[in-house]
Image (cartoon, rainbow, N blue to C red; front, side, top):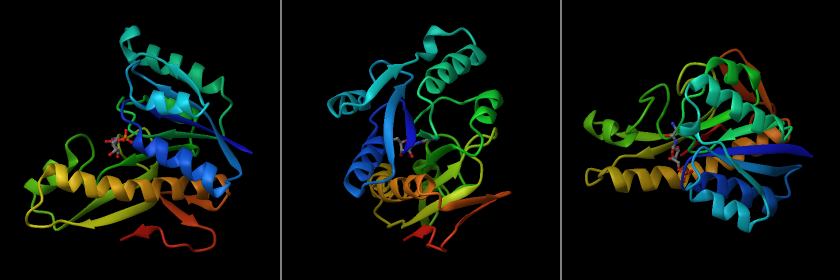
Length: 208
Ligand code: GAR
């Protein structure tokens, strides 16, 4: 059984999608803990209701990024994870933290990386006149919203779209591609080769 730890900052809808898929599809894995950097992260309630251990490591309690990263690593290591999943975790993690979990730290970002790293992705994509947007699951490297891409979803932009409508449609695809990517990892079906990630049986790594 692979051990998964999920880090969240808020709503946690991607975390919920992963927990549900893991249970319903009988993955060879278990979500052993959900850790938040905010005590008021809504997703913590879902985790508690589903009998998953929770912890809070508040970034505000630490004077430096390094101090927070060390406290977070301490909490994560206590769970002995095979995979650490960032699901709407809105703190930048330093090179030491990222290096500690190299090859077993995944993130989802609501854009077609390498386009639009950072915040307000849908607003920026609309302003740029993009005709298609999407989401990216990737292994985390020290560079923000960067790293070997596991899977992407592609969502057409409609002329009537605003930020809310677009983000809702992209989020619905996140709930497909993130559980699938995590499932592939725990089943040992992903091979990282430099900047590229391949599915060993050649499954499609794009969701349209
Ligand atoms: C998701 O859209 C996720 O892609 C994004 O935050 C949202 C979290 O929603 N993550 C980032 O922007 C990371 N750079 P959720 O808490 O409901 O999963």
